[in-house]
Image 1: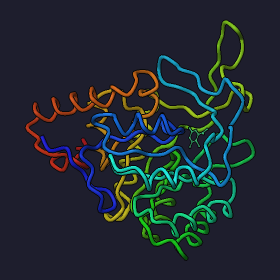
Image 2: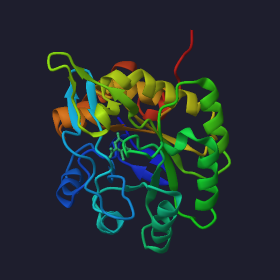
Image 3: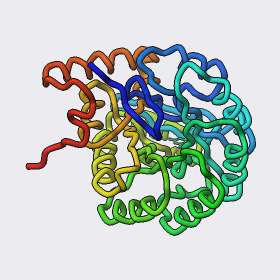
Length: 308
Ligand code: RRO
């Protein structure tokens, strides 16, 4: 079967990516990703202007039905990741960038623009875990203003990472903003922000930052992720590709994301639970489903979800 897929004129050998933040913060972790079979591309940890240690631990907690995290954007600072993506040759890269302010984001993106990096950049508009900093993409006016400032100078391929939306009007509103800009892709969804997990025996929360509030990921968010992929595919310009992220634990989940319209699919929580071998398993399972259904390529079923 042919699993190749395209994003921003870049050809990937398969549909699978790591979710940003998952095993992609350090040089060693990135080297592991470069050596991981059936991982078609490498997404870096969202990088900020200055290095950050992130929030206090415990800041990640594994659950039977997913995970909760409040990492707080720990990263080595953008020069490290910008240097890394210019060195990496094993597979295509997506350089994830975040900021604590619009000014920070613009400063980082100006350096990306001026660098020799010709690959894809992704602007994270949806980190839920920095105390006092709202998720930008929940503010449609602020998102439009920021993108206007970005595209005043940025000419390289760039997409955006979105938070989950839960109202059909919000899908209309974010799509109306994004359709006015030459973005390459949207990556949907970031974690479901500010959930709260309660340990009943201890009568306490499970993560330390923000009183236990944190971003939810894993199996419990699959329907939300699929809804966001589907709703955005129905609203965005054809030129905007979609990376589906959220809730993938099986090849069937990868298939479902693509059926909803995803061009690529990324895996987060399940990598933490299972290790980097997950990409081989998901690929085998996806191949088996495609064989059973008689599909030869991802485009045979991409976006073809049927309604009743
Ligand atoms: O580092 C984090 O706390 C984090 C980020 Br930047 C993000 O975009 N999504 C998430 O779940 N955690």
